[in-house]
Image (cartoon, rainbow, N blue to C red; front, side, top):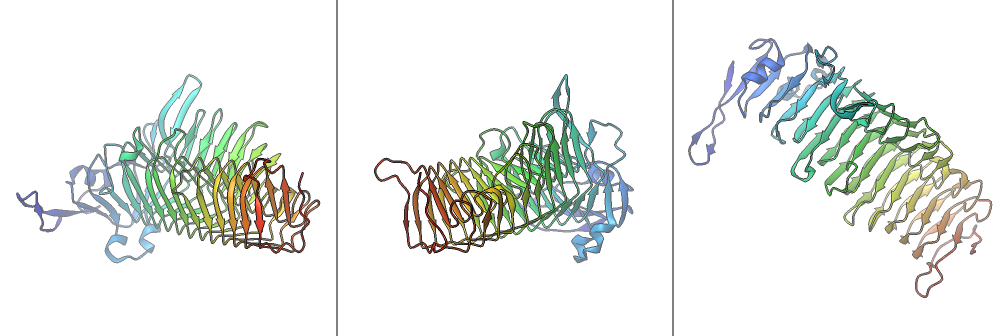
Length: 458
């Protein structure tokens, strides 16, 4: 065992010595090294495949590949923790944080694969399975520079977090840092109930930065949420959620029942959100009935939510009722959506951007070349109070309704926009439907270049 001495004063009492424990030279298994470790130690793992399921056991330690030593990224793919041979099918996650850990517990530089998740409740009708790759409950963690691939959380009851699951009874007390990971081909599935977070499910405070979410999936009979990531849980908790500089590509959400509902690649519920500098490419929502955004859904977000400088391209929603392929803002307050690009997205209604029973500002976005199979090629608001300012809405196509903008039973101000070269059956540029009649509440329009539009007011 090699000793690295880190001298610092601890509570004015004395000095602490941290050690590096090597696997396999000091201990044959990663879990053996964790069991021997003390807070502040590092478990350093050589390249190889380790067929085991590990538990941090509440320790403030770093478990890392040799990437931590020399930042050579080839170590990540060559240092594999394979959890496929768990002795207990109800405890088949690859990595566990479940003893009150926080962000001083660090997992760095591994490939995490083969996990099948852990039983996390259920009924007589079947199990609820969560956390195929990583299971984090009533705890926090720092998970950085890993490949989390080919894990699953499949149960009959509500299941999810195929790659990673992080949840707590009091979520405001815990934090997840998820940075610089590749999260790919993970799966969440439920036979009887909802499935959420094919890649990641987190309903604790989360910082999710510089990750790639590729080809993850969520599939269920009734409700499918967040093929790449589902955040915020299903109760009215107020968490902080930062989702920035991520790539979200080729993820798919599916519901099989005709009355099922599905919400695309990323969904957050009830959180204070920041979505900034992300790229959403070619994600699909394959719901058989109510298919909301293929890329991003923000549900019941509060007034501190920012959606800024994201790029939405080529996302597709399919189903009987498809809304907002790129971005769907649902029942949210004072959301600022600015400096985004939404292009070449496809669905029934408003593939570029849809505000539904929501309030906020839509400013300086470029919404272009989107295709609505039925109504509203670019931007739609429904029963919303919106400032729509300084956007470019161009070359969108609709087979019905407005080609560029459709303002349905909404109020607010639309100003300084360019609405150009859109095509639509009833209003190529801007359509206004059932504006509220009371004084001061109708939508006002000013300085909008709508040369190709004919305004429709019913």
